[in-house]
Length: 281
Image (cartoon, rainbow, N blue to C red):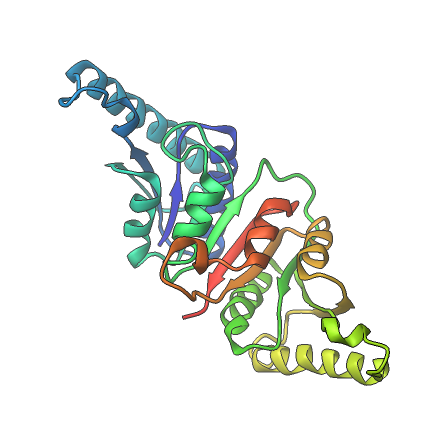
């Protein structure tokens, strides 16, 4: 099941459309969730009944419009809706327990508002075990390409597996981006490096990673993109010609700010297409 957050905003609409299409491709049900967060309005000890009714009514309106949008876009997708009281990040984390994927807009109005990048990316993507897709604005041109970032650690394999599957479902090419940088001490004049040897080693990193999945996905065209650059810069550039950018999250640490790496945060802030953050289990 795919979970998608809805709050009535433009970015929420984009997330709904993306989630509907992905549910159709995956052949899984779609659950639309609206979080009714009363906390900002509870100035008094006991909430005003009229305000509570208004928030509940608004949540139902948002869900009704969201369901209509999904059914119009993908008629055959099984759709359910749920209005849940609570903070957006907490609601999504709870809903993600039995989810295949969680989809949210990059910014919202109310139920999934404001610090979506901080709240969802930090506290949800780093703590749930399914991919979290952040959709920014309406999608225009279709490039028929999925981009995934890889490094030399085994933790990137879940992101690579997800990217291969997305490319297969879309009939798209898969661009595997590996950006590398020389260590700081490499610029010391007394230390010499064989750049050809380094480049060869970096290309081998990509081949080793791709080999694990390419045999099971022979229909996916793989483009190896190895470059000397900062990972955020390389991935952001690649996202300009992509339908989806996939990055891994190592899931280390015990608090939200530590669970999402600097590359994931940087990509979420600057990417030009939807970003899927896949946590290493």
